[in-house]
Length: 386
Length: 159
Image (cartoon, rainbow over all chains, first blue to last red; front, side):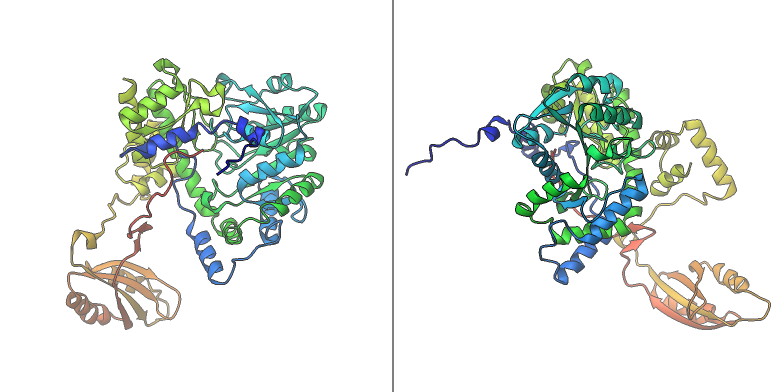
């Protein structure tokens, strides 16, 4: 047998595996773990959506759909965005149904970047941003955000990192892992910077509905931003539909056309039955969403207060279902804290440094778990740091 | 303020301190509001949702559709109230459709419920017909699913 000798992709080999994996393996090997490490809702998908998908399968919705996705779903998405936030996209050619934001992000970066283009990634950030930039031939440029400023995207901070090669700024708001939501004022200033330096804003808004103070501000809704913004959204978090792999991306037509081109040759379409479930969720599960959001809000208050009482401070999270407390008072590194807490007290959290070096000294806790579990986790954390 | 009721409806046991934490309203405010609602009847009482089947209690429930003869100048109130006062009656609702009242009757045996319907309920003035449906199994009651919850299939750590 002669093994292949030619090297694998240099680009891929250079990207390190996700630091979350190690914790997953460790947590899986243990019994009685309370997990605050889960990046998905603990609610099942609203029954109306599941029931619609079952019905659709029984009646043959097992085929491809158009590359762009079911027109009815695109129309529902565009109507919802216009009604909720006043941002307008044409269902015909400015909206594409994808296999989750993950695919949408990959399409965006591949359609946008030329080799060597820089993309500013404010950190701590979702684990996939920098690797996806690299896979698309770009260079991720991390910019550390300040926890003392509640991780706001200070336009001066971002501006200082812009070079001639900068193509875009890629961010999530509300954020995984910090739970911070960017204000309309900061987004407006960021848009002005983008206009001045000719940048794209790549805005991951998967947590848009999980916003606890006022309503969410889409990046594309602020003055000057629409023409240079990609809105990435989906159903996974708002409608508790992570496993269905269905989301959407909205962008100005010239870019959307190129994204469509990649999508038609790679994914072809998002799963048909998932698109039907998503459409039904939009039509009939608004009450479920409101109940889930109210429930997250109660858990958020309880958990943030509990952490605060333990001296693990964090800026009040405005969105998503994460808190990102500082654990510096314990004298431990993020990894030591997370490993120790898992081994001694069987509570899984994610060390902050997997979200970028600026996450060091923090851990990510998800409160997408029941109140009794959160209360028990707080007791265990208290014991661990005592 | 509505949030206080949502918390209490899900957990009648919730302490003032806990409600304050969950809603972000201060404890004094929560205490005052609850007292006001108790006084005005917005909060009727605090109850547990009991699965009597699981406890092993042999209770028999029937839903009875009751037809009431209309009489000029009188609504359904007098008949409905007369029915509602019986200890065996758990609920009385005025409904649209072919029948007028839908009532829930509870007893310790089928015979007891049948006797109640035959001897008491159908004998009430202006009750002209009854249609009795014995309850066979409860799947959801008072918004609470009584079937086993779905298992959490999430992996323990995900991005």
